[in-house]
Image 1: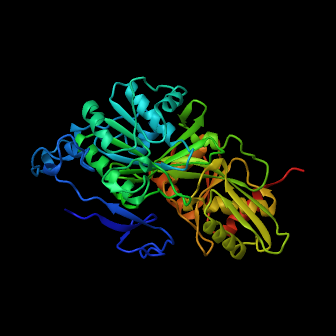
Image 2: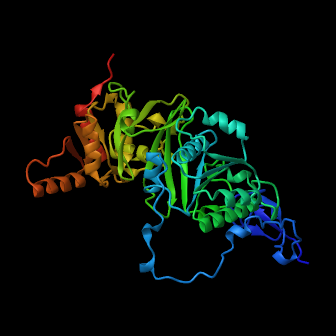
Image 3: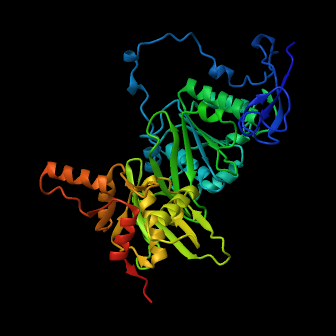
Length: 484
C-alpha cells in the first residue's frame, strides 16, 4: 500500500520542502511553511463498487476516450469555436472580443470591489440569452445569491446555482448540464478529497484549480475562477495558479469611489494593454463608455496644483487630472505623500525639479494624487505631475484649456511618448486647445502634417517642450494666479 506523502508548502510562493523551515528558502518569507499531506492516488480497479475514490470525482470527465492524434496546423479550423460574447462591452474589450471556449480565466481583486457582482451579471446575462451557465458558490447560500441577483438587471431566472465547496461534487452537475460557462466563487473556498488540508491552502488551491481546468479544457467550457488578493495586492495562492490559467484579470479601484478598472495581467488570446472602466451603482456595475468626461467632471480650473494628462490604456486614450499640494514643512523634515501615483516616480521628479529648474522643494511638504481613484503608472504622466507640483509651489494655475504629456529623464529632458495623435484627439474632443508635448514628438507631428498636405493640423495646438525648466518658464508666463 502506498504511503502518504508529507511536505511543507510555502503559503507565499507555493514552494515545497521536505522539512520545516522558519524562513522559506525560495522567497524568504518568514513563518510561511505549512505541513501538507498528499493522499496516494487510488487505482480504479481497487475501488469498491459504490465507494468514492479520493480525487476521482472528475476523472470520468477528464480522462480522454481515445488517443489524440497530431494534426497539421493548417487543418485546424480556427472558427470551429467562436468567441462567446459576455454581454458586458468593457469585459469583452479586455478579453479581446469575448470568452474563448475551453479557456480558464482568473478574476482577482480586493474584497468588496465588485468581483462577484460582475461575475453574477455576466452569468445571469448569458443564462438569459439561452446559454447553459453554472454558478458555483462556496461563500454564499443559494438564497443569498437570489437576493443579490434581484437588484441586478438582466439576470435571467434560468441561471443554474450550486452551493458546494467540494470539487468532486461538481462531477454530476457538469455531466448533466454540460454548461458552456462555469463560474467558481471563489477558488479559495473549493477543496478536493485528494488533499488533506484546509480549504484555501496552497495545495488545495493548486490541486482544485488543476482538476477544474482540465475538466474545462476537455468539455470546451469557459471556466471563470474568482480569487482573493493578499494585503500586498497580489493574488492569493501559489504563483503556479497564474501559469495554469489562460487569462488573469484584476479588478482595481477605491471602494470610496464609484469607478472600477478591469485590467489584464495575462491574456493568451488578446492584448494585455486594454482596460475596462465600470461604475458601481445601486443596481450593479455599469459600463463607462466615456471615462474622460467622468474623471474631469469635478475638476477645479482656477486653483493651482492641477494638471490634466492624456493617458493611454491599450487602444483607449483617457484624460486624468493629477493634483499636487506644496506646503512648508513645519518640523524640518519634509513629507512626501502620494495617492494613486508611484512613490519612487514622484520622488524622482521632485529631485529633477529641484536641480534642473528654479523650483525650490527641499524644505516643502509635497502631497500628490490622481483624482477619481485612478492608479497612474505610465511614464508619459511625468510632465503633468511636474507641472502640477510646480503650479502649487509657484502659485500659478495651469490654464484650464491646457494639458501636458511627456516622460522626464534625470537630466531634465522631456522624452517622447507613443501615439500622440490619439492623445491629442481625445484632448481636443474634451475642449483642450493646447497640449504640452516633447519636442521630438512635435517635430514628428510637423513632418507628418507637411507630408499629408494642408487640412491635417490637429484640433489642439501642440506646444513643444524640450526640458522641464522650459515647462516651468511656460507656466510662469501663461499661468494664472489663484483668485483672492
